[in-house]
Amino acid sequence: MLNRIWNSPTLMTWLSYSTKTLTLFGVLPLILKHFAPGDIVLWYLFSTIISLQTIADFGFRQTFSRVISYAYGGARDIGVFLETGSDISAEEGTPNISLLTQIVSTMRYIYLWLSVVLLFGLGIFGTWAMIKPVNGAMHINQAWYSWVIVLAVSCLSFYSKLYMNFLEGLYKIAMVRRVETLTSTGSIISSIIILLISPSLLNLVIVNQFWVLVVSLRDWYLCKKTENRIYETVSVKQPFNKELFRKIWQPAWRSGISGFMSAGLTNITGVIYAQFGSAESVAAYLLAFRIINQVRDVSMAPFYSKLPLLAMLRVKNDLTTLVKVVKRGMLLSHAVYVAGFILVGALSGVLLKAIHSEVHFVSQGLWLLLGIAYFVHRYGAMHIQVYLSTNHIISHIADGVSGTLYVISTLILMHYVGLYAVPIGMLVGYLGFYAWYAAKYSYRSMNVSFWWFEKQTSLFPVLAMVVYSVVYLNFA
Image: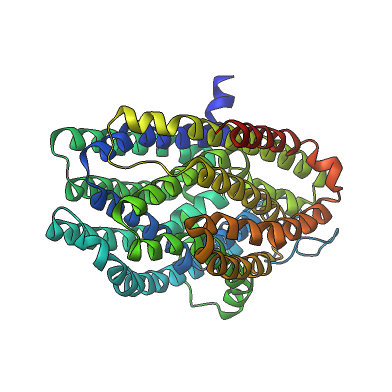
Protein backbone atom coordinates (compact mmCIF):
# COMPACT_ATOMS: atom_id res chain seq x y z
CA MET A 1 0.00 0.00 0.00
CA LEU A 2 2.75 2.45 0.99
CA ASN A 3 4.73 1.52 -2.10
CA ARG A 4 1.68 2.21 -4.28
CA ILE A 5 1.24 5.65 -2.71
CA TRP A 6 4.97 6.36 -2.99
CA ASN A 7 4.93 5.61 -6.72
CA SER A 8 1.60 7.24 -7.58
CA PRO A 9 2.13 10.14 -10.04
CA THR A 10 -1.14 11.77 -8.97
CA LEU A 11 -0.58 11.53 -5.21
CA MET A 12 3.04 12.64 -5.46
CA THR A 13 2.03 15.57 -7.70
CA TRP A 14 -0.63 16.50 -5.18
CA LEU A 15 1.94 16.30 -2.40
CA SER A 16 4.28 18.59 -4.33
CA TYR A 17 1.57 21.10 -5.25
CA SER A 18 0.12 20.99 -1.74
CA THR A 19 3.55 21.84 -0.38
CA LYS A 20 3.70 24.81 -2.74
CA THR A 21 0.32 26.01 -1.50
CA LEU A 22 1.91 26.50 1.91
CA THR A 23 3.20 29.67 0.29
CA LEU A 24 -0.36 30.99 0.58
CA PHE A 25 -0.48 30.30 4.32
CA GLY A 26 3.14 30.86 5.34
CA VAL A 27 4.90 33.21 2.93
CA LEU A 28 2.03 35.28 1.53
CA PRO A 29 0.72 36.57 4.89
CA LEU A 30 4.24 37.74 5.82
CA ILE A 31 4.69 39.47 2.45
CA LEU A 32 1.36 41.25 2.83
CA LYS A 33 2.22 42.21 6.42
CA HIS A 34 5.78 43.49 5.92
CA PHE A 35 5.81 44.79 2.34
CA ALA A 36 4.38 48.05 1.07
CA PRO A 37 1.95 47.84 -1.89
CA GLY A 38 4.71 48.91 -4.31
CA ASP A 39 6.98 46.01 -3.26
CA ILE A 40 4.06 43.58 -3.37
CA VAL A 41 3.33 44.66 -6.94
CA LEU A 42 6.96 44.01 -7.90
CA TRP A 43 7.04 40.59 -6.21
CA TYR A 44 4.01 39.36 -8.12
CA LEU A 45 5.07 41.15 -11.28
CA PHE A 46 8.32 39.16 -11.19
CA SER A 47 6.24 35.97 -11.01
CA THR A 48 4.02 37.13 -13.86
CA ILE A 49 6.91 37.94 -16.15
CA ILE A 50 8.61 34.63 -15.30
CA SER A 51 5.38 32.93 -16.37
CA LEU A 52 5.81 34.56 -19.77
CA GLN A 53 8.64 32.09 -20.40
CA THR A 54 5.96 29.94 -21.99
CA ILE A 55 6.02 32.38 -24.91
CA ALA A 56 9.77 31.83 -25.43
CA ASP A 57 9.27 28.07 -25.10
CA PHE A 58 6.89 28.32 -28.05
CA GLY A 59 5.26 24.95 -27.46
CA PHE A 60 8.46 22.89 -27.43
CA ARG A 61 8.10 21.76 -23.80
CA GLN A 62 4.87 19.85 -24.27
CA THR A 63 5.91 18.65 -27.71
CA PHE A 64 9.25 17.20 -26.59
CA SER A 65 7.71 15.56 -23.53
CA ARG A 66 5.09 13.94 -25.76
CA VAL A 67 7.45 12.71 -28.50
CA ILE A 68 9.89 11.38 -25.87
CA SER A 69 6.95 9.36 -24.49
CA TYR A 70 6.28 8.06 -28.00
CA ALA A 71 9.90 6.98 -28.52
CA TYR A 72 10.17 5.52 -25.02
CA GLY A 73 6.97 3.57 -25.67
CA GLY A 74 8.56 2.05 -28.78
CA ALA A 75 7.11 4.19 -31.58
CA ARG A 76 8.96 3.81 -34.89
CA ASP A 77 8.58 7.48 -35.75
CA ILE A 78 6.94 10.74 -34.69
CA GLY A 79 3.46 10.97 -36.15
CA VAL A 80 -0.25 11.34 -35.51
CA PHE A 81 -1.81 8.49 -33.53
CA LEU A 82 -5.43 8.55 -34.59
CA GLU A 83 -5.86 5.66 -36.95
CA THR A 84 -5.93 2.04 -35.82
CA GLY A 85 -3.07 0.06 -37.26
CA SER A 86 -0.80 3.04 -37.89
CA ASP A 87 2.56 1.83 -39.19
CA ILE A 88 4.42 4.08 -36.75
CA SER A 89 2.84 2.62 -33.59
CA ALA A 90 4.78 0.46 -31.15
CA GLU A 91 5.05 -3.30 -31.55
CA GLU A 92 6.77 -4.52 -28.41
CA GLY A 93 6.74 -1.34 -26.30
CA THR A 94 10.53 -1.33 -25.90
CA PRO A 95 12.28 2.06 -26.07
CA ASN A 96 13.42 3.19 -29.50
CA ILE A 97 16.95 4.25 -28.52
CA SER A 98 17.83 5.57 -31.95
CA LEU A 99 14.79 7.85 -32.08
CA LEU A 100 15.31 8.97 -28.46
CA THR A 101 18.90 9.94 -29.27
CA GLN A 102 17.82 12.07 -32.21
CA ILE A 103 15.09 13.75 -30.15
CA VAL A 104 17.39 14.59 -27.21
CA SER A 105 20.10 15.98 -29.48
CA THR A 106 17.56 18.20 -31.25
CA MET A 107 16.05 19.29 -27.92
CA ARG A 108 19.41 20.43 -26.52
CA TYR A 109 20.16 22.45 -29.64
CA ILE A 110 16.76 24.14 -29.66
CA TYR A 111 16.75 25.01 -25.95
CA LEU A 112 20.16 26.64 -26.22
CA TRP A 113 18.87 29.06 -28.85
CA LEU A 114 15.56 29.58 -27.07
CA SER A 115 17.47 30.59 -23.93
CA VAL A 116 19.32 33.25 -25.90
CA VAL A 117 16.00 34.54 -27.26
CA LEU A 118 14.59 34.63 -23.73
CA LEU A 119 17.57 36.61 -22.44
CA PHE A 120 17.09 39.34 -25.03
CA GLY A 121 13.29 39.28 -24.79
CA LEU A 122 13.15 39.63 -21.01
CA GLY A 123 16.10 41.99 -21.03
CA ILE A 124 14.29 44.43 -23.31
CA PHE A 125 10.56 43.96 -22.74
CA GLY A 126 10.85 42.93 -19.07
CA THR A 127 13.11 45.83 -18.16
CA TRP A 128 10.76 48.28 -19.87
CA ALA A 129 7.80 46.83 -17.97
CA MET A 130 9.69 47.26 -14.68
CA ILE A 131 10.41 51.00 -14.98
CA LYS A 132 7.14 52.34 -13.49
CA PRO A 133 6.64 49.63 -10.81
CA VAL A 134 10.28 49.90 -9.67
CA ASN A 135 9.85 53.64 -9.13
CA GLY A 136 7.07 52.81 -6.65
CA ALA A 137 9.26 50.46 -4.60
CA MET A 138 10.57 51.29 -1.14
CA HIS A 139 14.21 50.92 -2.26
CA ILE A 140 14.65 51.54 -5.97
CA ASN A 141 18.25 50.30 -6.23
CA GLN A 142 17.41 47.04 -4.47
CA ALA A 143 14.43 46.61 -6.79
CA TRP A 144 16.68 46.83 -9.86
CA TYR A 145 19.19 44.39 -8.33
CA SER A 146 16.27 42.01 -7.75
CA TRP A 147 15.22 42.24 -11.39
CA VAL A 148 18.75 41.50 -12.64
CA ILE A 149 18.89 38.38 -10.43
CA VAL A 150 15.48 37.22 -11.65
CA LEU A 151 16.50 37.79 -15.28
CA ALA A 152 19.77 35.83 -15.03
CA VAL A 153 18.36 32.90 -13.07
CA SER A 154 15.27 32.67 -15.29
CA CYS A 155 17.41 32.11 -18.39
CA LEU A 156 19.47 29.38 -16.71
CA SER A 157 16.32 27.75 -15.36
CA PHE A 158 14.69 27.89 -18.77
CA TYR A 159 17.49 25.91 -20.41
CA SER A 160 17.28 23.25 -17.69
CA LYS A 161 13.65 22.56 -18.66
CA LEU A 162 14.97 20.06 -21.19
CA TYR A 163 15.81 17.73 -18.28
CA MET A 164 12.26 17.94 -16.96
CA ASN A 165 10.95 17.27 -20.49
CA PHE A 166 12.96 14.05 -20.57
CA LEU A 167 11.85 12.91 -17.12
CA GLU A 168 8.19 13.59 -17.87
CA GLY A 169 8.50 11.82 -21.21
CA LEU A 170 9.73 8.73 -19.37
CA TYR A 171 6.72 9.05 -17.03
CA LYS A 172 8.93 9.61 -13.98
CA ILE A 173 6.33 11.95 -12.53
CA ALA A 174 6.14 10.34 -9.08
CA MET A 175 9.93 10.43 -8.59
CA VAL A 176 10.22 14.05 -9.73
CA ARG A 177 7.35 15.23 -7.51
CA ARG A 178 8.73 13.45 -4.44
CA VAL A 179 12.02 15.30 -4.74
CA GLU A 180 10.19 18.49 -5.74
CA THR A 181 8.36 18.35 -2.42
CA LEU A 182 11.68 18.60 -0.58
CA THR A 183 12.97 21.55 -2.63
CA SER A 184 9.63 23.36 -2.34
CA THR A 185 9.66 22.87 1.42
CA GLY A 186 13.21 24.21 1.59
CA SER A 187 12.24 27.28 -0.43
CA ILE A 188 9.19 28.00 1.72
CA ILE A 189 11.05 27.60 5.03
CA SER A 190 13.90 29.81 3.81
CA SER A 191 11.45 32.47 2.64
CA ILE A 192 9.63 32.48 5.98
CA ILE A 193 12.91 32.79 7.90
CA ILE A 194 14.14 35.70 5.78
CA LEU A 195 10.78 37.48 6.09
CA LEU A 196 10.91 37.12 9.87
CA ILE A 197 14.52 38.24 10.44
CA SER A 198 15.23 40.62 7.53
CA PRO A 199 12.16 41.33 5.39
CA SER A 200 13.06 43.03 2.13
CA LEU A 201 12.28 42.47 -1.52
CA LEU A 202 15.94 41.87 -2.44
CA ASN A 203 16.49 39.31 0.33
CA LEU A 204 13.34 37.42 -0.63
CA VAL A 205 14.33 37.38 -4.30
CA ILE A 206 17.82 36.08 -3.47
CA VAL A 207 16.43 33.22 -1.40
CA ASN A 208 13.73 32.39 -3.94
CA GLN A 209 16.07 32.39 -6.95
CA PHE A 210 18.65 30.31 -5.07
CA TRP A 211 16.09 27.54 -4.86
CA VAL A 212 15.25 27.95 -8.53
CA LEU A 213 18.89 27.11 -9.27
CA VAL A 214 18.69 24.15 -6.89
CA VAL A 215 15.67 22.87 -8.83
CA SER A 216 17.62 23.09 -12.10
CA LEU A 217 20.48 21.07 -10.61
CA ARG A 218 17.95 18.62 -9.18
CA ASP A 219 16.39 17.95 -12.59
CA TRP A 220 19.82 17.52 -14.18
CA TYR A 221 20.84 15.00 -11.51
CA LEU A 222 17.61 12.99 -11.70
CA CYS A 223 17.81 12.96 -15.46
CA LYS A 224 21.34 11.53 -15.35
CA LYS A 225 20.53 8.82 -12.77
CA THR A 226 17.08 7.56 -13.77
CA GLU A 227 16.19 4.41 -15.72
CA ASN A 228 19.67 2.88 -15.72
CA ARG A 229 21.23 6.15 -16.90
CA ILE A 230 19.39 6.03 -20.20
CA TYR A 231 19.88 9.78 -20.64
CA GLU A 232 23.64 9.30 -20.89
CA THR A 233 23.04 6.72 -23.60
CA VAL A 234 20.76 8.94 -25.69
CA SER A 235 22.43 12.31 -25.05
CA VAL A 236 25.20 11.71 -27.56
CA LYS A 237 25.63 14.85 -29.65
CA GLN A 238 24.57 14.38 -33.26
CA PRO A 239 24.44 16.63 -36.32
CA PHE A 240 21.34 18.79 -36.42
CA ASN A 241 18.56 16.67 -37.92
CA LYS A 242 16.49 18.97 -40.13
CA GLU A 243 13.92 16.29 -40.96
CA LEU A 244 13.26 15.52 -37.30
CA PHE A 245 13.15 19.24 -36.49
CA ARG A 246 10.42 19.76 -39.10
CA LYS A 247 8.36 16.96 -37.53
CA ILE A 248 8.77 18.53 -34.08
CA TRP A 249 8.27 22.09 -35.31
CA GLN A 250 4.89 21.34 -36.88
CA PRO A 251 3.11 20.60 -33.56
CA ALA A 252 5.38 22.91 -31.54
CA TRP A 253 4.62 26.18 -33.32
CA ARG A 254 0.91 25.48 -33.05
CA SER A 255 1.28 24.86 -29.31
CA GLY A 256 3.39 28.03 -29.11
CA ILE A 257 0.66 30.13 -30.70
CA SER A 258 -1.76 28.50 -28.28
CA GLY A 259 0.40 29.40 -25.28
CA PHE A 260 0.73 33.00 -26.34
CA MET A 261 -2.97 33.44 -27.04
CA SER A 262 -4.03 31.89 -23.70
CA ALA A 263 -1.64 32.13 -20.74
CA GLY A 264 0.48 34.72 -22.55
CA LEU A 265 -2.37 37.18 -22.99
CA THR A 266 -3.69 36.83 -19.44
CA ASN A 267 -0.21 37.37 -17.98
CA ILE A 268 0.44 40.33 -20.26
CA THR A 269 -2.83 41.84 -19.04
CA GLY A 270 -1.37 42.01 -15.53
CA VAL A 271 1.87 43.56 -16.80
CA ILE A 272 -0.04 46.21 -18.77
CA TYR A 273 -2.37 46.99 -15.85
CA ALA A 274 0.71 47.58 -13.67
CA GLN A 275 1.69 50.43 -16.02
CA PHE A 276 -1.30 52.64 -15.25
CA GLY A 277 -3.17 51.27 -12.21
CA SER A 278 -2.56 52.49 -8.67
CA ALA A 279 -0.20 50.39 -6.52
CA GLU A 280 -3.09 49.32 -4.25
CA SER A 281 -5.42 48.22 -7.07
CA VAL A 282 -2.62 46.48 -9.01
CA ALA A 283 -1.52 44.65 -5.85
CA ALA A 284 -5.08 43.45 -5.22
CA TYR A 285 -5.48 42.26 -8.81
CA LEU A 286 -2.11 40.49 -8.97
CA LEU A 287 -2.80 38.87 -5.59
CA ALA A 288 -6.14 37.47 -6.82
CA PHE A 289 -4.52 36.45 -10.11
CA ARG A 290 -1.73 34.64 -8.25
CA ILE A 291 -4.13 32.82 -5.93
CA ILE A 292 -6.47 31.65 -8.69
CA ASN A 293 -3.46 30.34 -10.58
CA GLN A 294 -2.29 28.54 -7.44
CA VAL A 295 -5.70 26.93 -7.03
CA ARG A 296 -5.61 25.95 -10.70
CA ASP A 297 -2.12 24.44 -10.39
CA VAL A 298 -3.07 22.29 -7.40
CA SER A 299 -6.22 21.07 -9.13
CA MET A 300 -4.25 20.09 -12.24
CA ALA A 301 -2.41 17.28 -10.45
CA PRO A 302 -4.89 14.39 -10.98
CA PHE A 303 -5.08 15.04 -14.73
CA TYR A 304 -1.82 16.57 -15.91
CA SER A 305 0.28 13.97 -14.07
CA LYS A 306 -1.20 11.42 -16.50
CA LEU A 307 -0.31 13.18 -19.77
CA PRO A 308 2.78 11.04 -20.56
CA LEU A 309 0.64 7.96 -19.84
CA LEU A 310 -2.00 9.18 -22.29
CA ALA A 311 0.69 9.50 -24.98
CA MET A 312 1.86 5.95 -24.31
CA LEU A 313 -1.72 4.62 -24.42
CA ARG A 314 -2.21 6.35 -27.78
CA VAL A 315 0.84 4.57 -29.14
CA LYS A 316 -0.62 1.25 -27.96
CA ASN A 317 -4.12 2.21 -29.23
CA ASP A 318 -5.61 1.30 -25.81
CA LEU A 319 -8.68 3.57 -25.87
CA THR A 320 -10.50 1.73 -23.08
CA THR A 321 -7.79 2.43 -20.53
CA LEU A 322 -7.27 5.94 -21.89
CA VAL A 323 -10.93 6.92 -21.39
CA LYS A 324 -10.88 5.48 -17.87
CA VAL A 325 -7.75 7.47 -16.95
CA VAL A 326 -9.13 10.69 -18.47
CA LYS A 327 -12.51 10.46 -16.69
CA ARG A 328 -10.98 9.94 -13.27
CA GLY A 329 -8.38 12.66 -13.77
CA MET A 330 -10.90 15.26 -14.97
CA LEU A 331 -13.40 14.56 -12.19
CA LEU A 332 -10.81 14.92 -9.43
CA SER A 333 -9.31 17.99 -11.07
CA HIS A 334 -12.68 19.76 -11.34
CA ALA A 335 -13.58 18.88 -7.75
CA VAL A 336 -10.31 20.17 -6.27
CA TYR A 337 -10.53 23.40 -8.26
CA VAL A 338 -14.10 24.17 -7.19
CA ALA A 339 -13.34 23.42 -3.53
CA GLY A 340 -10.28 25.68 -3.54
CA PHE A 341 -12.04 28.49 -5.38
CA ILE A 342 -15.00 28.54 -2.95
CA LEU A 343 -12.73 28.34 0.10
CA VAL A 344 -10.60 31.31 -1.01
CA GLY A 345 -13.68 33.36 -1.89
CA ALA A 346 -15.20 32.75 1.52
CA LEU A 347 -12.11 33.36 3.69
CA SER A 348 -9.83 35.78 1.82
CA GLY A 349 -11.28 39.01 3.20
CA VAL A 350 -11.28 37.74 6.77
CA LEU A 351 -7.66 36.56 6.60
CA LEU A 352 -6.37 39.82 5.10
CA LYS A 353 -8.03 41.80 7.88
CA ALA A 354 -6.64 39.44 10.51
CA ILE A 355 -3.03 40.10 9.43
CA HIS A 356 -3.65 43.85 9.04
CA SER A 357 -2.55 43.82 5.40
CA GLU A 358 -2.33 47.08 3.48
CA VAL A 359 -3.61 45.18 0.43
CA HIS A 360 -7.29 44.35 0.11
CA PHE A 361 -8.74 41.46 -1.84
CA VAL A 362 -10.63 42.08 -5.07
CA SER A 363 -14.43 42.33 -4.89
CA GLN A 364 -16.36 39.07 -4.62
CA GLY A 365 -17.99 39.81 -7.97
CA LEU A 366 -14.62 40.00 -9.71
CA TRP A 367 -13.42 36.87 -7.90
CA LEU A 368 -16.57 35.00 -8.94
CA LEU A 369 -16.11 35.92 -12.60
CA LEU A 370 -12.42 34.99 -12.49
CA GLY A 371 -13.25 31.62 -10.95
CA ILE A 372 -15.91 30.79 -13.54
CA ALA A 373 -13.67 31.91 -16.41
CA TYR A 374 -10.80 29.75 -15.20
CA PHE A 375 -13.13 26.78 -14.72
CA VAL A 376 -14.37 27.03 -18.31
CA HIS A 377 -10.80 27.37 -19.56
CA ARG A 378 -9.64 24.34 -17.59
CA TYR A 379 -12.52 22.32 -19.01
CA GLY A 380 -11.39 23.14 -22.53
CA ALA A 381 -7.68 22.83 -21.69
CA MET A 382 -8.03 19.28 -20.38
CA HIS A 383 -9.96 18.24 -23.48
CA ILE A 384 -7.25 19.89 -25.61
CA GLN A 385 -4.64 17.80 -23.80
CA VAL A 386 -6.62 14.62 -24.44
CA TYR A 387 -6.62 15.34 -28.15
CA LEU A 388 -2.96 16.47 -28.12
CA SER A 389 -2.03 12.93 -27.08
CA THR A 390 -2.68 12.04 -30.74
CA ASN A 391 0.05 14.55 -31.73
CA HIS A 392 -2.45 16.30 -34.01
CA ILE A 393 -2.38 19.90 -32.80
CA ILE A 394 -5.53 22.04 -32.84
CA SER A 395 -4.73 24.25 -29.84
CA HIS A 396 -3.43 27.07 -32.05
CA ILE A 397 -6.90 27.34 -33.59
CA ALA A 398 -8.72 27.02 -30.26
CA ASP A 399 -6.53 29.56 -28.47
CA GLY A 400 -6.07 31.78 -31.51
CA VAL A 401 -9.78 32.37 -32.02
CA SER A 402 -10.65 32.56 -28.32
CA GLY A 403 -7.67 34.86 -27.65
CA THR A 404 -8.81 37.21 -30.39
CA LEU A 405 -12.32 37.25 -28.93
CA TYR A 406 -10.83 37.92 -25.49
CA VAL A 407 -8.74 40.89 -26.64
CA ILE A 408 -11.53 42.50 -28.66
CA SER A 409 -14.22 42.08 -25.99
CA THR A 410 -11.89 43.21 -23.18
CA LEU A 411 -10.85 46.37 -25.02
CA ILE A 412 -14.50 47.22 -25.78
CA LEU A 413 -15.76 46.52 -22.24
CA MET A 414 -12.87 48.11 -20.33
CA HIS A 415 -14.37 51.56 -20.85
CA TYR A 416 -17.71 50.48 -19.36
CA VAL A 417 -16.93 47.97 -16.57
CA GLY A 418 -13.25 48.58 -15.81
CA LEU A 419 -11.25 45.60 -14.56
CA TYR A 420 -14.35 43.36 -14.78
CA ALA A 421 -13.72 43.39 -18.53
CA VAL A 422 -10.83 40.95 -18.05
CA PRO A 423 -12.81 37.92 -16.74
CA ILE A 424 -15.81 38.81 -18.93
CA GLY A 425 -13.50 38.88 -21.95
CA MET A 426 -12.12 35.48 -20.91
CA LEU A 427 -15.63 34.06 -20.79
CA VAL A 428 -16.45 35.49 -24.22
CA GLY A 429 -13.43 33.73 -25.68
CA TYR A 430 -13.73 30.45 -23.75
CA LEU A 431 -17.49 29.98 -24.04
CA GLY A 432 -17.67 31.50 -27.50
CA PHE A 433 -15.20 29.08 -29.03
CA TYR A 434 -12.44 27.46 -26.96
CA ALA A 435 -14.35 25.09 -24.70
CA TRP A 436 -16.79 23.54 -27.17
CA TYR A 437 -14.23 23.37 -29.99
CA ALA A 438 -11.71 21.51 -27.79
CA ALA A 439 -14.32 19.16 -26.37
CA LYS A 440 -15.64 18.23 -29.82
CA TYR A 441 -12.27 16.91 -30.96
CA SER A 442 -11.58 15.25 -27.62
CA TYR A 443 -14.85 13.28 -27.64
CA ARG A 444 -14.22 12.23 -31.23
CA SER A 445 -10.72 10.94 -30.44
CA MET A 446 -12.03 8.90 -27.48
CA ASN A 447 -15.14 7.77 -29.36
CA VAL A 448 -17.52 8.98 -26.61
CA SER A 449 -20.56 11.27 -26.47
CA PHE A 450 -20.86 14.57 -24.59
CA TRP A 451 -23.52 13.54 -22.07
CA TRP A 452 -22.13 10.04 -21.40
CA PHE A 453 -18.73 11.52 -20.61
CA GLU A 454 -19.54 14.78 -18.80
CA LYS A 455 -22.18 13.37 -16.47
CA GLN A 456 -19.32 11.39 -14.93
CA THR A 457 -16.76 14.19 -14.87
CA SER A 458 -17.99 17.80 -14.81
CA LEU A 459 -21.69 17.66 -13.86
CA PHE A 460 -21.39 17.82 -10.07
CA PRO A 461 -18.51 20.35 -10.00
CA VAL A 462 -20.57 22.61 -12.30
CA LEU A 463 -23.59 22.30 -9.99
CA ALA A 464 -21.38 23.29 -7.03
CA MET A 465 -20.22 26.39 -8.92
CA VAL A 466 -23.84 27.28 -9.73
CA VAL A 467 -24.93 26.91 -6.08
CA TYR A 468 -22.03 29.09 -4.89
CA SER A 469 -22.89 31.74 -7.50
CA VAL A 470 -26.56 31.78 -6.50
CA VAL A 471 -25.68 32.07 -2.81
CA TYR A 472 -23.33 34.98 -3.57
CA LEU A 473 -25.84 36.83 -5.75
CA ASN A 474 -28.59 36.51 -3.16
CA PHE A 475 -26.68 37.16 0.06
CA ALA A 476 -23.65 39.26 -0.87
